[in-house]
Length: 86
Image (tube, rainbow, N blue to C red; front, side, top):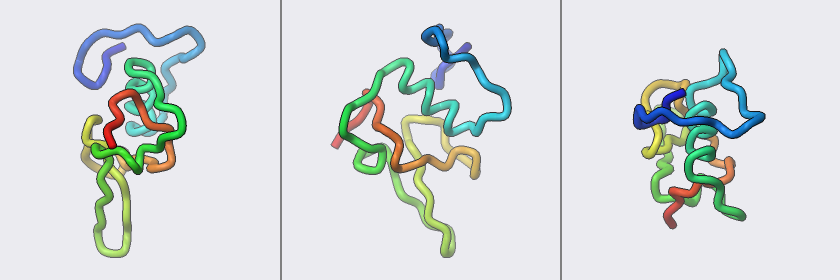
């Protein structure tokens, strides 16, 4: 399996690749597998997580992951990855 940057990685045991999963969730799991989690922090408080607005719809994007399209809308309540910056 390749990570966000095109580098081959091996996921930890018990983390099988799933089909039909949203692109954002797949990228989030890769970031967690590579960099780990930051306890007590959420993605919304990270400097790489930006809130966007299109009309009345508000959504978040992580700019450390591949962005573009509704499949990459980020859940701001996810536990932050090891790339977290205040």
